[in-house]
Image 1 (cartoon, rainbow, N blue to C red):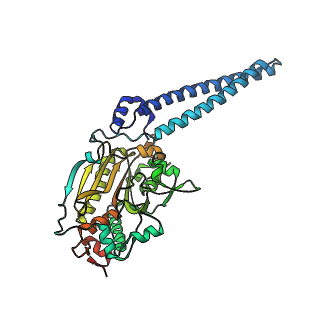
Image 2: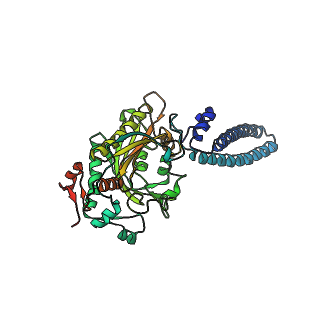
Image 3: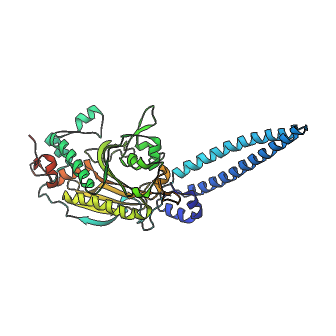
Length: 424
């Protein structure tokens, strides 16, 4: 959430920045007007309260002196009725102001590339050459079904579309990928977290999924609970509502969880295979750092995700997201895209974002040096990596003409030394 005082003090700058996202900046004018109304009503209520207090004292004095105070008491009664009305108006204005503020995205870094969508993202790094197999590449879904290890038909029977049953060696490889990624981050001084997979609405508000993106979530009927769309949500909120000592920095968390997304609005996109599922696994990095360290923390997270792909020997590219593609809560984002031979293009496998103090304001995450005022921390998150998409990339880049799949060297210790996955 943006700081209201900052908005009012930098109105044109804020509107210009948000305009790069194609955000309707008339909402900012509405917010400023609502805040003026809030101030006016607050002043009116306070003045009325002061007048009631003064008149009540006068009533008391008159009664003690045996004088008639009916006229003053009638005035107090009228003032109390008016203050009740004004308080209701004030509550309504505060509620609308908070609602509108909650719908305003984060400000972009000044050097964010200007663009409309993912086609305008800027490539900043490439690694490896697109894989040349020497034969026609098969899609990962075809490979998995031919091996008898990806079962979409049974998953559809059990649940519906966009689910899968992993079997045998591909189930083991999914687990191997996650374990390798977790160990990689533990070696970089991350603290492993296993969070709840169900969170409440306040937790989702803290990271910015609610109220704006409710349709993307799976809600549990009859409860204020939701399945998590990413481990970013519970893990970032570990420090929600706290004022902690800066000696705790840096807070570096890694979590491996299932993620659940309704994929609202994505009908017809990647309907086959593992690219866009309602349930998928992901290893997530979350950093909570002091403001001056967040830019370096972002660089470190991107480097970690890149190194994992390089260790897996998967060709990739890193792109800086343009203004039209940066997520709601982020001010700066880098995506890593891995090469998929069957599609002959790069597809997203990790997204690393610096959210600045945007989430910290919503979740009230602050730190305090002795003798100083509390300060909002900066929060960052990144995929390290999406496990299912990593499996897709391995299957396609390491496939053999006979339909078997070579196991990347770094994963073999997690696969009991197995070098090749083949049908029985």
